[in-house]
Amino acid sequence: MTTTVHIGCGAGFANDRPDAARALANDLAGRDGRRFLFFELLAERTLAEAQLRRLNDGQSGYALRLFDFLEPVLETCLDAGIAIVTNGGAANPTAAATRLRQQLQGTRHASARIACVLGDDLLGSDIDLQQWLPAQLDGEVVSVNVYSGADGIVQALDQGADIVLCGRVADPSLAVGPLRHAFGWQADDWDRIAQATAVGHLLECCTQVSGGYFAHPGLKDVPDLANVGCPIASVTAEGQIVIGKAAGTGGCVSERTVKEQLLYEVHDPASYLTPDVIMDLSQVHVRQIATDQVVVEGVRGKPQPTHLKGLVGLRGKWFAEAEISYAGPGAVARAALARDILLQRCTKLAPQLTPWIDVIGVASLFNDAGGQWLQQRLAQAADCQDVRLRISFLDRDKALLERLLLDAESLYTNGPAGGGGVRRHIGESLGTASFLIERTAVRQQLEWF
Image 1 (cartoon, helix red, strand yellow):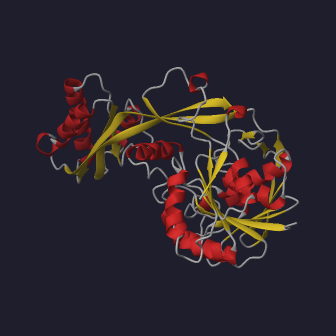
Image 2: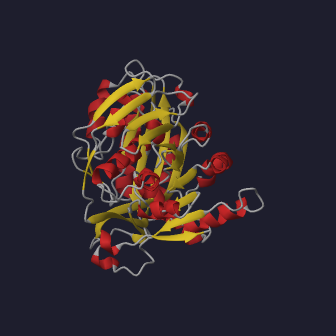
Image 3: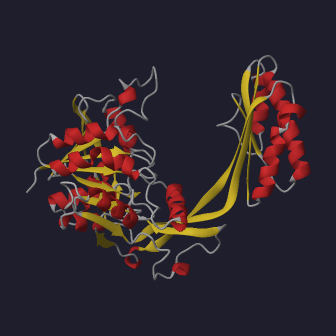
């Protein structure tokens, strides 16, 4: 029986840094015991975007940068027997597997086993979706996916997969699957599955737990943040968890970084719902045992939920925005005048629309749709000499939005003095809606390549 398993995360989102995973793979390759590397590459809207690409091209639909992450570590991992698991298959895991198989042909790793975990994509399934989807959906449905658990990953690894390409499995399940496989933990051993889920949750955002999202100059300083290292969890058969990071990298792993990530996006620490288990973090203890080595103890589990979360991707709207800068004396007053002009122009050209207008440098992140926060801040920020006005719209009428953006650009000659650096952009806006579905209605399947 394996006594210690090492599992590392090489990416926390679709546009993370592929080069950081090299040091992770090299570190794992030098360790004893079972080792796994996973890439977490999906978010809610990126899955709908992937479905759009699949509709346009049947050989597309996996994570756009999936191979940017795989290629730098593939040889190292296959040489060392480090299994790779990722949800980067996104909307089309089989297309990713086909490409990967083609790349491996003629190499010494041509016999590597590639498994796809399918079943999360319900749009083409025989499931009666009307029974589960919301009654009213604002847009054309382009994707219907369910957050599935670790069962398919376990099955793939049990059958000898070297690389496991998944669609929308839940983020923590990317670690639950390897740990269940390596230790032979049963799916209903709730405390062990909760401990594995804690590992996945701590690692799923990659370098957030090793200092990236933690850093705050002067308050929470982090060394060599430009080279922050990917995290590694070392887990024993008894469920002890030690969080560290790849050797020779920047960043830090401390009690504080672990505590922050442990509570990240957790709605109820005593009852965190995942497809594999309901995780209870209310009695967790975090303890530093060495530099960049933190023990996590006290994670408990409760039986998994009866329902799984599903996600619908919707299209049909366009998002448009335009920006213009004002600088020097009176910059805020000129930006405020430009705002008034744009509001009047929008009332004339598109009275049915309510634009969102920010004055970046005065009020943007804290602004509101009605502009009340901005109005309060304008007088206080009168001395600011570097601001940028931004106006945005969301609507189904693309042609109308394009006209409104051109009208905003006309501030060059028709607005306050000194405006410059206009930028216009319009793109498709993908919306999402969530739903619940009974877990017994969903079935994962494997496909081998």
